[in-house]
Image (cartoon, rainbow, N blue to C red; front, side, top):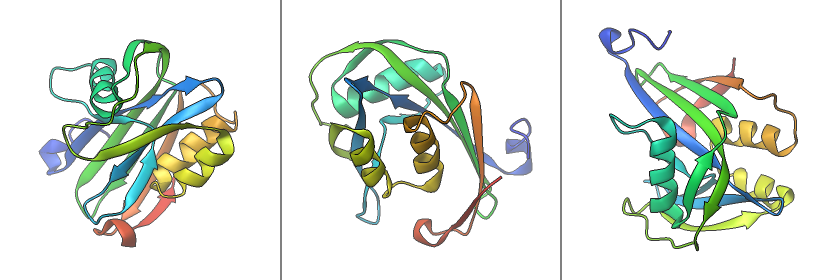
Length: 171
């Protein structure tokens, strides 16, 4: 279902921005404690609040989750779309790379989700990303491997209602 008109059909649109932050060939990943108690490693990011642009939301989320201040972003590196028909929800993610940033890492997430983080080399990143949903793991893995064109789109269909029991397929 196209984004336009989702809400008029009873669907909820969930807009998220994700960050790729590199330092010396290492990628910043954060450990998110999920509702079921599982730890999930992903790049930092979060929900775009009403009235925010994607990069404004991302700068806020990165600061809240890691303590780092991002001063500038690239244009969108890739996008992810996930439809959850059993939940009448569509997740739209736009991912940007930090061009300039500063600060020291501090993990005092006001949402109480992010517990820690680290800059990881590609091998460690791949190992940590195993804990992430496929719609996070695959695009980040493609980016880490240099197998992604700027502006790439990743589309998924996730059926089922329980996170650990969903069937996810790439479209």
